[in-house]
Image (spheres, rainbow, N blue to C red):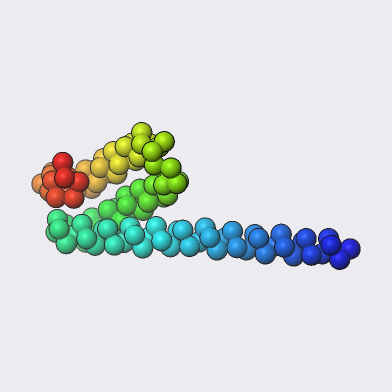
Length: 109
């Protein structure tokens, strides 16, 4: 009985720590998306209305990147696809001039 109780408490503790790890990853992704959005806004000077959409694009990029970041060599194709998706989302949000500046200044293309 004592072993079952100990095992149950251990399992519950493990569940709580898993939620903390997930929450920490989400906070890191959100913070990074916020930072990148602010940096991009300083460089490109887009308006505040576009800021939310740019933030969401970077947030989705961060989530997708986090999934493959453990092994980038094997996931080079997926990384390219993720970056292309980010570029497409930003192209939809930014004006043609702003998007051109993004490609030139940020991506180096």
